[in-house]
Image (cartoon, rainbow, N blue to C red; front, side, top):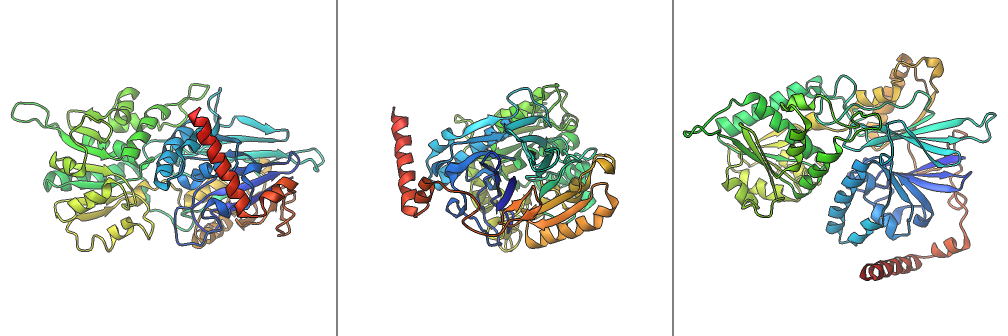
Length: 549
């Protein structure tokens, strides 16, 4: 039997973690192990101590992608005794290491925990999307591409059902976060389109971040997005001789904005020269230490190829959008400290120790016209200083490019914080959202890739990773759309923290003691927090002793 219990992201959009138990092989494992990152909804899990499982009994983690709300508690899981493998793409592994190091520095946890992560990189061997990897006898999985961020994937997990007449395989798909780029409409700059679930899928676990919302068609257009971006750049930076501040998340959003700003200027700004007939460039910068580290990873991993020689990730229209004739110039855009064309110069602040430009005051004094700065929610990082320095000048402007939690300063940037400010505010967050909207989620679930209905299994759906309204909105829309689809829906559940028997298709009795059989040692360990803390202290001591050797 395979059973599943939804531990995180049950009552909101943070802390994704699904706990599975394959009883035939007695293997427990997780899909994602995310940190709770704030929100309005009460959470079952906000920190590791709230998890219902024993970390020592988790055999491995299948990781969908590198956002902290999907991977942020892996170091804590290790501190509590997890020694298994973490399955991921190379891109996800490299980004996770940077993201977790930054997170551990902020939290004050032991950074050496990162060295104890045992990675299994699914694309280190000959690889193509859809390749099957065995986990144990009767348990296997496949990674399918997501366009959410670099390295992201949907995980299709299959297991044998021994009680069925022919020991058939069943399949459950974990969507992770579903991106917006689909075949023929890859409108965000960097990544290829989504892969859809297999027609024979029996279960799907679907995120619902925007399950009750649809975006306007105008924001789903690459040409329209870049045209609107140039309109702001031209008005603020050229006509008003002001400065444009762009708060941005370090992971993926910063890299998208680098491409879009470069493309907007190259496409629209005529070549100009000074009195000595030298190119008069348009200086702008990225002031994001974490973002620049991640950009370096993008300079390599964005160009990864499958065993058949096809690009794993890169949006094939990107070179044309940027006006480049080969990939080396695109790699340089992410990798080098300074990038120069006849029209513009891009600097990455904080990467070159010899540079005289290190602080927000330096950047403004050197007349950088556009500043991409972390963090995206405006509650930490260089952007806080830039807001103070730039908000009182009516020639300046701020572009909001991402979600703002209600308790973050960025929310008040759109409302209270900037109420008395002279700088203009433009909200581009809908243009850059990396989560599929309601229509995209419905298409992801019901699209069968033109497979005949007789070859499609009726699917049971678990909806998680969303507010109550988002989950309800998606459920209603799926029910409406199923009549027009070849994929039929058997049941729809809102994910809950109760064991579900995936063989039988029913919830198990809600008891606290019979979910797993505990050994005597485990029962002793679970008697009190004091014993747990002693074990953690011993692990910390052992870690420090090993490092000294």
